[in-house]
Structures are given as structure tokens and as C-alpha cells.
Length: 456
Ligand SMILES: Cc1cc2nc3c(=O)[nH]c(=O)nc-3n(C[C@H](O)[C@H](O)[C@H](O)COP(=O)(O)OP(=O)(O)OC[C@H]3O[C@@H](n4cnc5c(N)ncnc54)[C@H](O)[C@@H]3O)c2cc1C
Image (cartoon, rainbow, N blue to C red):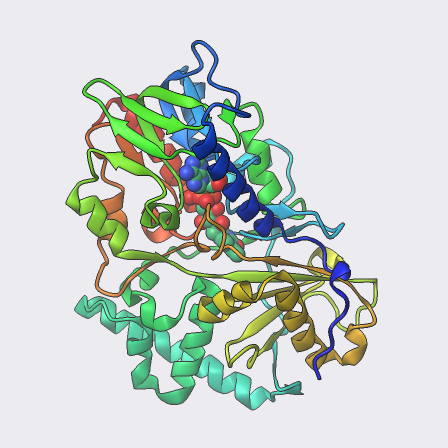
């Protein structure tokens, strides 16, 4: 019988708070748009550039524009900056509920930003001792070797698909590699893209940038949030509509209507796809098709805090449970930065199911899987857990964007300016840098520089 510790041991879930908050905000906006929300003061309702969303893209854009002397206002639905880069401290130990790895460090603007502001970054040494388990049983070196060989063969399959320009799904491309290849590619897709391989474009995946990774002891989310300090951000301010008038744009918020010459829209692709913001006149067909050609993955994390017991596992000695929840895998990152915390990660439909189960169930499912590896005493040393469920978060609707097979041009099409005044920017438009905090910032900067250069 599965062990269940009483619910109070599990702390409240941060993203569920967001969900509740959105419902309250929506109800307030419908009942009395100006009540309880400070309306724009005189002069505050006008800007040269409005930026919607205070994640990595919005922050980078707003910084570049304010540095250039533009009047900017950032409209953010949450009461914090950082978006999907968020360091959660509710377990008493910080962990990155969203982005954690500073990818392609050689060209990632956050590396320079961290150096300039004295924020420590460490090289990431990779998964050093990744030990696989199934049904609580350690799988041998032979298993690992087969999986490694299958993954290596997959790179050749991808290269040949690139040469032929055929945009099949990752799942279809893996078929030629037999069962080992199919399972290796499925796990890679679930754990690194957060989506089932049949929904991921092979050619978009092949185009993703390579490079070395860094990790941030302070938290990647905190690093990004620091960059937002001092910017003109209006929090708790969800945008519901953008109207393009002949000389400006009008942006509807609970604080009133904001007028700006240009707008940079950095909300996640999932928010655009859910039609959470109404555009008038309607978006051009090319933009609508671009949004339809993309979808959101569901990388999902569960953090488990322990009381100092390490179960004879050293940091870097990470493992993966192959058959977590209906066969999907879950990785366990052990004691990051030597802290008493374990980060479970899964994705795709397994991540969605975990989120749908709710915080308490998800935490105990992860604890059960962990106990299957280290033994039942994991439960005696468990202090509390936290689910980071981005799929059910209405301000993200998923972890990061994925190109559907056959829609390779979607990211570039979404990046095209609309009506000379609207620019979409964020990880979804970032081409080879998509799905990352670095890519989002580069896209924010690109949009800002285009406005400064007056290119429409
Ligand atoms: C679990 C997980 C793990 C990840 N791991 C990594 C990693 O290791 N490395 C990496 O580089 N990337 C990683 N990512 C991806 C990375 O977090 C994102 O690519 C990046 O943060 C996106 O930045 P953005 O500015 O495009 O969007 P966001 O950060 O989502 O910012 C958009 C903002 O818009 C706001 N918003 C939404 N709707 C509205 C509205 N109607 N009105 C106003 N504001 C609104 C949101 O609240 C949000 O703050 C991960 C993501 C997740 C979820």
C-alpha cells in the first residue's frame, strides 16, 4: 500500500496560488474593473513602449529601452518578475522551480550580466553518475551502454533528416533504431523537451544551439529577478486586450487603458494559444498559423526536502527511475549545491498527469519512487515537498514551446512584427536558442533594438 504522510507536511503549492489568484483577479476585473486596483495615475497611462510580461524577454527589452531613454512600462500579471525563471524558497531551501541551467554560456547574455553584478556561476559537470532503476531495482551497466549507443545512433539519424530537409517527429525518426532507440528518444524528449516525441519536430530539435552550461548557486530565477529591480513594472496587471489604432496601440488592463507607440508581447506561447489576450484587428493569418504550429511542453518538477540524511548518496550521484508513473521516466537530481533537497523532473503526458493529480499526490508519487530506490526510510527523513506544475499555470500553460512536426518556420513567422507596432518576443521566437532563458533575453533585446532603430 502506498504510504501517505498527512497533508500538512506538504507545504502549499506556489503555482496553485497563482491559479487561485488569477480567478480572483478575473472576477474582480469583471465585477468592478477599477475597484481594488490602482488606476493609472495621470501620465502613467502613456508610454513610448509597453512591454507585456516581466520574464527574461520583457526584462531584457525594458532595460535596453529605458537605457536608451524611452518611456517604458512593463505590465505583468503576477506579483513578481522572472516568469518561468523562478527560484522557490518555500521549503526553506532555494530551488529553481523553472529554469535552472544557463545554457550555451558562450553566447548567453545572462553570463555577462551575472559577472557584471558579482553573481557566482559555476560550470556544470553534467550528470556524472546517472544510475537507472526500474521497479526499485538497479539496472546494470549493460542497460546504460545500450541506451548510450541508441542515443548516439540517433544523432546520425537526425543529421541525415537535416540533410534531406524532412521534418518528421522525433518518434518517427527513432523508429529505424528499434526498441532501444524508441525508448531512449522518448526519455530524452520527455526529460529535456518536456514533451512526448511524436509531438516534437525533429528538425527544430536538431537546430537547437549547443554550448557549455553553467549553474547558479543563488538560483537562476533570482538572477533574472535581480535584473528587473528598478524597472518600471506594474505588477498584478494582466493584459486582456491589445488594440492597434492608426497612431498608437491601446492596451486593456484592470488599471485602465494604456496608450503606447509600440508594444512588445512576451507572454508565453501557451497564453497566446489560449487567446488570453484579444487582438483587434485580428492577428494576420501568418501569425495565427505560427501560433498553431507551436505547442507547449510540460516539464514538471517536484522538490523533496529531507532532514539532513543523505542515504549514502553523494551530490552528483544522480539517478533516474525509468518506470515512474505509467512508464514515463523521472530523474532525481541529488543534493544540488550540497543542499538537503532532491529535485524530481519528468515531462510530457507524465508531467501533465502529475500536475493533474495535484500537489499532495504528486509529491507523494515522487517520494514513493524515491523510496523505491533508497528504501522506505526515505519517508522517515522526508520534511516537505513542492510541485512546480507549469502546465496548469494559466500564466504559462506549459513549460516551453515546441515546434509541431512539419511547422519548422513557426518560430520565425511568430517573430514577424504585426501592423508595424506589435512585436512578439520570448523563448518561442528564439530559433536555435528557443526553450531557454538566454534565448528569451536575446529576443527581448532584438525587439527593443528594432524599435530603437525604427524598423517596422
Ligand atoms: C520546469 C522548467 C525548466 C526549465 N529549465 C530551463 C533551463 O534549465 N534553462 C533554460 O535556459 N530554460 C529553461 N526553461 C525555460 C525558461 O524558463 C523559459 O524559456 C524562459 O524563462 C522564458 O522567458 P520568457 O520571457 O519568454 O517568458 P516568461 O518567463 O514566461 O515571461 C512571460 C511573462 O508574461 C506574464 N504574463 C502571462 N500572461 C500575461 C498577461 N495576460 N498579461 C501580463 N503578463 C502576462 C507571465 O506571468 C510571465 O511573467 C525551463 C522552464 C521550465 C518551466
